[in-house]
Amino acid sequence: MKLIRDIHAAKKAANQPVISFEFFPPKTDEGDRNLLEKTIPALLRLKPDYCSVTYGAGGSTRDKTLMIVDRIQREHGLTAMSHLTCVNATKEELRAVVEQARALGIKNILALRGDPPGGNGEFQKTPGGFEFSRELVAFLKELGGFSVGTAGFPEGHIACKEGREVDWRRLKEKIDAGADFVLTQLFFDNADFYRFRDFLTRLGVTVPICPGIIPIMSSSQIKRFTALCGSKLPAPLLAKLDALGDNDEAATAYGIDYATAQCADLLKNGTPGIHFYTLNKPHSTTAIVKNLGLAS
Image (tube, rainbow, N blue to C red; front, side, top):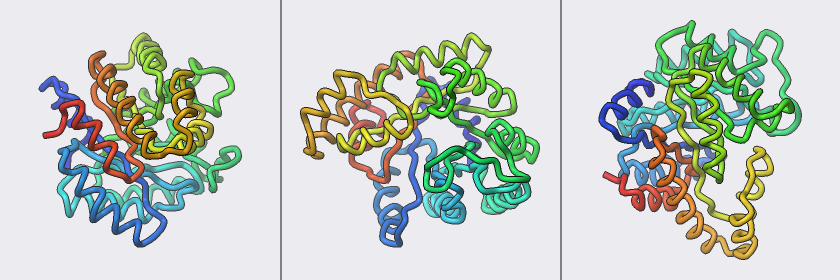
């Protein structure tokens, strides 16, 4: 299994974008089977460079996250990354999770502060744990042997009341602590990403900053997602979604076209790759990657 920092270096040398997919641990056995036996095999036909698996709010899917990452690597030979959060875990508990990951041959970890249980309320530091994701980044680098990623927020983190540039400076601290690459939260206006990237470049950031793109599959769903994470829907996009209403089939088709145009512009303007939030569904992501001419 490769280190993601090495994947980026090799793709940059070849003048090719890094394409990656994100999955979440399902809540049911049937969901597990669909993900592992249908969704992942379907998306592997696109020859992604790596994939990542999220970590439920409050660390609720810890064991399942590692299980899925392990199975992807063993059964499909694809480099996979585990998310790891600071929520509900002491430093020693995090050390145990990291050593479990190491024993499974996992070499890549996305270090996050994480959402509280249920995804609601303020983040509460666990006694004996970490308050900030930069502390988790530094801890992982100290343990060694992993390529460590971190999250970036082109519109600023929803919990950062001091403004987006304060949040971006904190991202620089995470990179200085040892993060090898950045994956961004979803966004729909590329101008937000370029402003974010240019600010970080002026701060001296040189690690890859990969935009996170989510294909719209439902008007109501994407409105709920953006409300939760603090991303905005540009007025023309919002008007189109309102016009489509609860026609999910039409929203999905429109979402493919919108994301294709968004990704094409990002790649044209020098982004090192695209990280797709697949929502464990292969159809839209497959269509977008094929539209971009990136399917092998």
